[in-house]
Image (cartoon, rainbow, N blue to C red; front, side, top):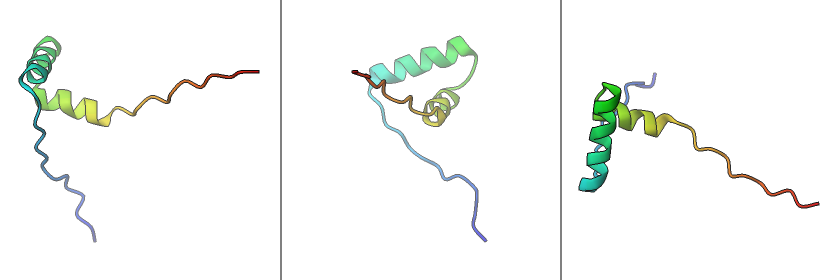
Length: 53
């Protein structure tokens, strides 16, 4: 049986990045952890493909 409990992660960011995360959390009425969780879980968009005929 495997443990499905997520582990803790520490993410270090520059001060200016922290300020953006903090402002985003404040504007959305959430926490910095929730903002980071959203950014980690959002799938990466596919790159646009140029179709040349």
